[in-house]
Image (cartoon, rainbow, N blue to C red):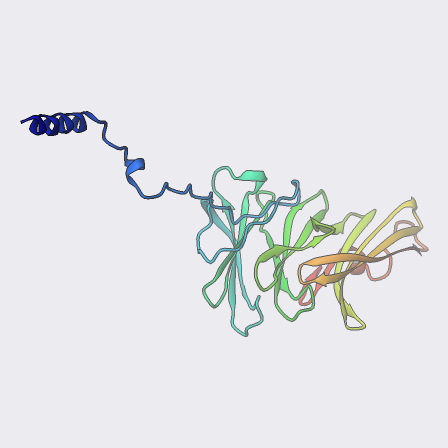
Length: 262
């Protein structure tokens, strides 16, 4: 009889104990999920941040607005055409990014790159091999001044879509100008070394001379430039305000078949 009473008391105490919580009932606690990194890179007009790893997902984490420009070319040198598209970013985006360059390779892989750019202008100037690797690259405008076009290069380095950098910062070169000053960009190869040449000239010192600076940049990788040399010269003219010989050399853009003025 006493044993039966003890069993009944034990059962009563067990029924009064609180039930285990769902977290306590699992064998192991849940591991918090890591935040997903944005595939957009930081634009040069803002402090650089670590670039996110490329993604094969065809969708950016930011909503896309209107299509701005596109081109078909062989960006990865596999002999097949790839598709490069530029979109406006709809709504607000971090770090002032308002454009997206999207490269869809013939394999189906997708690479995204965030950019900034002025409204009302097409981002794509043209397609040419700017770094001498035999693959197509994009010549892109990120804005303009009163008389110059602010220009950069977007390349596929075999893994990611990148804006070309120099000394850790995205590059920007100018072409165009006014009757008193000019800027020019030339893609060229000398002694089997591909180069980007940036020229600037002005006649502010004298109406009869043009003070000219020429910077030569060499490629250290497919997406990185280094300043190789800087030279200065004076071009004399016999007529006040006359342009120097071959004005396209000092006011134009020449990269492959992309030429301004044409």
